[in-house]
Length: 317
Image 1 (cartoon, rainbow, N blue to C red):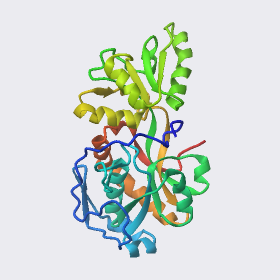
Image 2: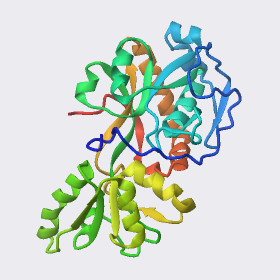
Image 3: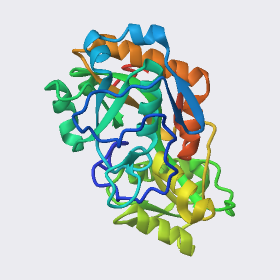
Image 4: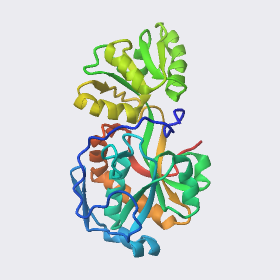
């Protein structure tokens, strides 16, 4: 929902993204066929090859099937999207990352759409092995699944291209009119910033709320507001794609690389498969070390939310 990094009800967005060149493609949806793991996969311009040692460390059931069953809730740009309107073929940051991890492990990550509120129960029931759906890692969810954390996701600031008002930090919004979607964490963030504006001797933020973030974007385009505060991944994707990247810029505050009030997003793995959790963590770390993860995140305009270390169950509350 809008009150967490992983929501319900994000607007469907038609993804205009080049398809991956994969040596043996699946359509991104589980069709019940046996795994079709290949020796290598090319994703985000990087060729990912199998690590034999990581493959051998996989649970026997996974090695035998040659695939990992992945639940995902589509659409939620830029993490999960359909390649085009009406298509069942999937793309997005999570899908690309899943293909890269699968290639490193020498198995195929087969993604199947699943409503978000049913993902964890489906993992518990054994219908899936893994979930990749921009899921916020928290202590409550850690009771029933294990997380391999791969991003820090919080709120970001979207401005018009060129950033004419020189917005560099959250407090630079003080004294300005700012757009935000109603009933969201981003609105709470702006409201909570008002005291900082006063303490700094600045005027408070003039907050304009909108039913949808797309409405706030229109207000930003028309000059009614100087910035739109949204989830950083959504803001980054909008900056990357709107008018071919010529409409907006994403503010990169070095003090908040993952966004303001960022929390970890994790790959959820069934607790019945601890060996798979370990293998996914090691594969992700290898992809972080060789720069593949950075290339994937850059493709979706959100390189700054990537972690530097693949941690497990990083959330502390």
